[in-house]
Structures are given as C-alpha cells and as structure tokens.
Image 1 (cartoon, rainbow, N blue to C red):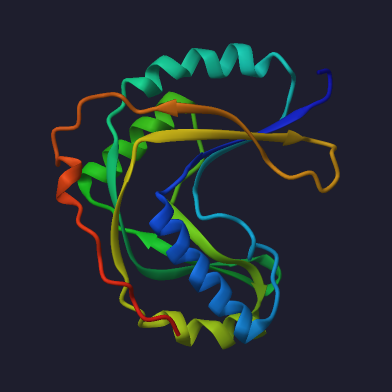
Image 2 (image 1 turned 90 degrees about the vertical axis):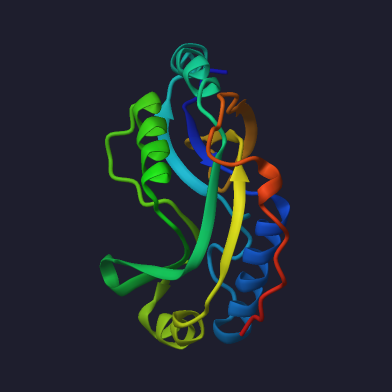
Length: 199
C-alpha cells in the first residue's frame, strides 16, 4: 500500500447508546429532512491523523498501543444536549458528556498517550454542520431534553480510509483494549435505564 491514509481514533459506545443516538438522528430527519451525518454511527472522536504514509501504522500506532493498554476503562454519562457553532452560520447538535475530575483526568491521559495537542470536548454528534434555519427548527426539541445515560468505554477503535479515495467510507483497522485497573466502579453498577421519550 503506497497511497496516503487517514486514521480516525475514536471511542465506540455500547449498542444501547448507538441505538439511542440513532433514534434522535432519525427523529431529526422528520423535521429537517436528510443531512450529512445522519448515517454515521455514534462515537466520540479523539484524534484524526490525516494524510499519513504507510509506515505510520507500524511505527506510531505500535508505539502507543502498550500505553493505551495500561489505561483503565472509563465510565461516561450522556447528560443532555449542547451545540457547537461553526463558520458560515453552521451548527452541530451533540450529546453532552458529563465531565467530572476523574473523566477529565482520563481524557487528559489518552491525549498525552496519543500526543493530541488540540483541545478536546468529548461529545457524541447527533446532527452535524446544519444551516441556521435547520438548527432553529431542531434545537427547541433538544434544548430541554433531559437525557442521562451511563455507559462504559473499554476500548479504542482505529478506522482508516484512503486520503484521496473520493467518497470512500471508513474501514476498521485496529481495536486497542483498555486493560488497566479501574478503582472507581465495578461495571455491574451501571443498570439499564428506561427508554426516554423522543420528540
């Protein structure tokens, strides 16, 4: 393989969270029609390494894998919805991840292991880069929606695509387990929640 490759490092929530976010995505379609990110599975982006040469996988990724293995799983909570504003009057609505000192420390650690220099706001995108007119239609439905859902993250997924591959989709490349001891909570303490009402 001699072409340039893009790598996306992400946290993939359990299926119940993917289904919950998927329902909000589909509910949004009823109000604004199709939009760019409606088919994207729920995830938390950590780092996007663009236009990397083939040896990136055998050097950089191999180097950080042991460090990531030493990290513990982390308990996260979806806690309502917020939004980002972008240039050209575009908006992104996302599921907010509650930040506690323990969660903040965990994300600071994974950033250090991956040498991420940019700021990181952990979130799960619901509707990405929509115009103001669509945002004004959707946001009232999300604004006061009280959704609190706990979930565990115990692995990092790496997906790839060719940099100049046109509209090629992301393909699974590698999964790295978080195997370190977690002294905060046993996984049994996260109980199933009642399905929330959509708009």
